[in-house]
Length: 331
Ligand code: DGY
Image 1 (tube, helix red, strand yellow):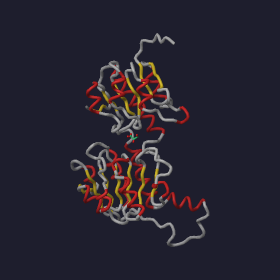
Image 2 (cartoon, helix red, strand yellow):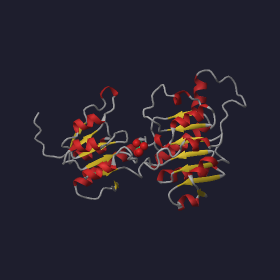
Image 3 (tube, helix red, strand yellow):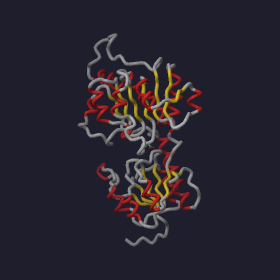
Image 4 (cartoon, protein in one colour):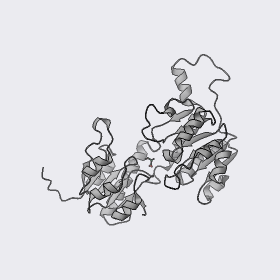
């Protein structure tokens, strides 16, 4: 079919991005959904994108989509912008983006509270064994009240450590500091006045992991932070430590974590992110009682997804208009 439209084209990796954002983009662009998207529940692959991207102006994607050199090369000279509907951009090859002169828009800020709320939820649900207790209730394990049954661990009087105190980490620190904790520790490149004002103490990752009862990982993944929670650091954790991750799976040496959990060397883990995603159903983490897993839903509220999609659309439109993007990763 001959397409007579002279409008520039945006490639969408799914057909169900929030409508408001799609409507906004459609005022100025022709939109095309990547062909494999949503067929039989399959995710779009890098090859699908390579097949669909030639001649497009922009790609509207999210954190599961690998935007690598092959994609950028296939896109051709009209391709100017990747809009990722995520605050993380570890899935985008920044060196290749620079080489091809493609700009990158992302969505910080709008999901801060949503992800921080989920992190607090994971801390409580893991330490108080919500999922285990719920399963026992539904499968007949609840016989009578028992003073030693389903006992968890409280947050009050505990040491809370936040690895990575950007916007999300700071918000988690604010929220957890309300739980009458005994100490708040955090790691960051520099002192954070907001966290200091909460009583937070800036420490090294080594000190944080061995001193904290609750360790919350809330940082971006990059070459410097990959496996920041490595085998040695896991080995140095307290026996009652609970590790929560809302950043990216590869921030943690997951094999080392599995071993520590299997051997009950730490108390538990609450993970919204893991490696790989989706986690295979036969993965050892799946069957552990001391592990609470969520399918990467940190930013998943309807309001936040709407805002992230709108910001992604605005980032793409800004490039069309030759304006600064509302949120651009400077390459
Ligand atoms: C983000 O925005 O990076 C979230 O992890 C969702 O991908």
